[in-house]
Length: 584
Image (cartoon, rainbow, N blue to C red; front, side, top):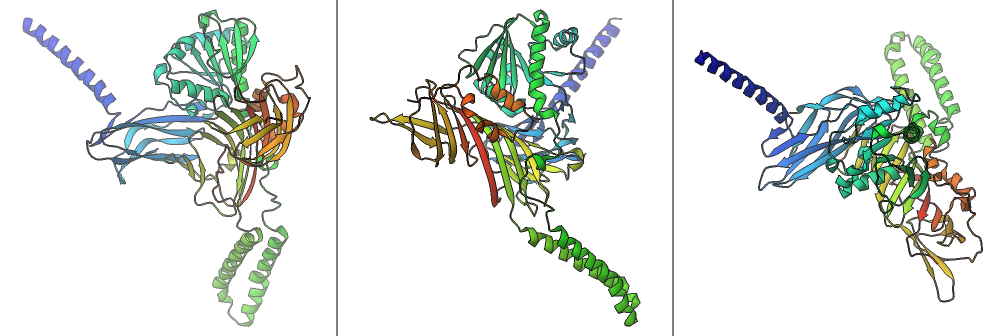
């Protein structure tokens, strides 16, 4: 009996050992071993989003003590169909180091799995257990919740208000501790709200806090639950809200502090206010604008080619390939030649029409960019929202180029998606293929946030004359400026780097007209292309002490995108906050 008992215990321990071994082998399989190189991809959750990017983070370790390796990763390794064909990045991993590589997937469908791996140019076995996100477009707010908050409780409390249905929002709770949150604002760009507690901010790294600031400044919304003082945390416009809430406007976004102990104690009015902010963040992404080239024309395209000339060529082709060809062959008694003469004439006319179309339109490509930048000269944060449009008679071989901080969202209807697209993140954001086709206008929404040193410099000479130096990197067509005391100034035609005198004025900012959320309202407008007209109309009413509006003839804050664009229409507006201590 004792032997049987011991045998049973041994079997139990053996079974437990095998069970935990299987569990450990499953977790180990997530890390792929390629000799010197160990690759550990972080799984991407299956997401349902409307806009923005999803971050894929991959850890690559080089075990060699002497040799560096070039590693290229690409997902998916098998793609069934979808708008995105592949996303890739190549990095150099020095000997004995580990790098965390980030790639971002836009809110575009990509169905497949697996991660392709290339080491020093040689393809290795793919990582088959890597699952790419299945993205489905949705038009309800998508909110990220920290693990310190209870998602089920929040979901229940929202439904108890009897205003929100179960499927009117989507809550995603992350299990990552705040110290491991991403330090890139694009990681949060797919969310219409981020909901955290005051303790979470204390645990976040400075990089994560900066990323959340960038996210809010480009139009996002951040809600903090608890008694957290934000006075020295952010450049903002403060707006008191009843029931223990304070709202701060930073750039195009909104930051909300809710003084409550927990989710359970939130009132219905507080929950309604929070949810309204989520919906306002989603608003510019809900409307699908299918007439993009009407709203934001890139060039005068009446018929792309001369329609009358094209019709004449087609009529000539019909006459030649039909009656003329038949009559001539009948007289020569060679009617059988119709077998090869008709295709030959068709080929000649197809080539003729193509040549006519190209030469009647020319080879010049076009780029039109229009945007608004909120520039805080104190923090050097430049937040931009706007539109970009491109047109090329020939498909550009180099694709489109943007930097790591730019969010690109194509504007088209579902039946105009075109070919599958590829993205490479090796040197910035390279939209390689499928994003712009020959003679088809391409339209995009643009958001970005980055640190910039551009600024407006003010000075006064000994005689009391006021001067301004254009340090914004592009010619200023019109400048509207309010010094720190609220006195208004205006200037025109200031070249980049030029110093001009400002005329003395007694005009003062109109009091009580500027709403604290008026920049936020510009973000909520789905168009994003009429900002120059908006800011030009009654600009003095949009200024506050220590701010300016500069209408630029150029694009210093957004890259061209299409490298070889011969024709450029670049306009931008800078709403700037003067540095403290500067002015008259």
